[in-house]
Image (cartoon, rainbow, N blue to C red; front, side, top):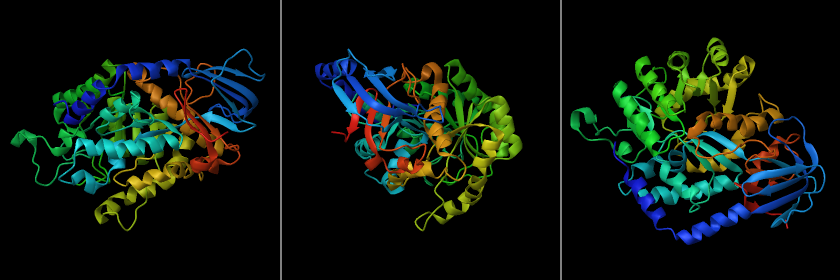
Length: 449
């Protein structure tokens, strides 16, 4: 599976950066000091605010949290918070930066190119950061060049935990071939989607091992397999189970050898139970699960990364609407069932092919209100989601602790105008209510004068 042209082109761009400028910026980052005074803190874990605190940020970490004014520190920036709420940055653990930032028409256009991907997705990455999302887990797509550009400071965006190309069997949820594209096993030609690093179509233990290892070679922090049918794919009904137990075990073993884990796309009980038997650590979706399977997941410590998917609309393909129906019905019950089963729960969006949906990313957090208290929601989208990110272990692309406001943690923070524990709707209005956004100790947004 060749090194993609997209990765090559971005790598060349990065090599052409003025190194002295980048080095100077890095030195300024290390020396950066921010003092936030008289602030209330939601620490990501506790169902109450820590009142009237003083927070000192040095470099990219929180150095001190004190109930008394901090003296002796020479801060480059002093923020008078005056009772506003400091909380961890938001985290979305099921996102597709490329698939979600482009329409299907754009992806299928004859003039589709690497440059157009970066041009389109760069804007979405910056807007996502300005909505308070300081970290995301990208669970499928050609993400490595964008992540590299963000980490080098060429583009503003969240931290990204990349899965790389989705791994799918032939006729699986990640088989994105056009009708005129035949199996490379018979024609010798890989599909357009594989050329762009969007997916790997891998059949049999050997091909699955190669696909997993290829993603790890590029820097995947976790691996994403398609274990069941999907609603946005052409060939596979929702009810089908994908990958044999042996194939899935091969992926789990290869990931474990690198100290990381496999997560799988799956809705149904049959698909999820096979994935559990194979040793996966996380299930994406699961809207059609039963209570017995949820309790099995809880017993084995397996995460459920769930979403409230878009229910549909007049512009959605009728076939896709039909395929989604059992999933949409299931998502009305899955949250309360999972909560009752005490499964490890994580939240994400999973937007696909409708870039305007990203404008509603914060609103989708509020869709959790029927099942969870404001505290439970805030904890899930900060601390709990960060715990899932940490499952990548040594393959995590960033060192340090996220999802909490505590001494020694990474300084990914939001200052909210109000108390989100009392009014969770504040999270849905980042443009007005997120007064200060900090990522990696750097001020991204500051409306306080």
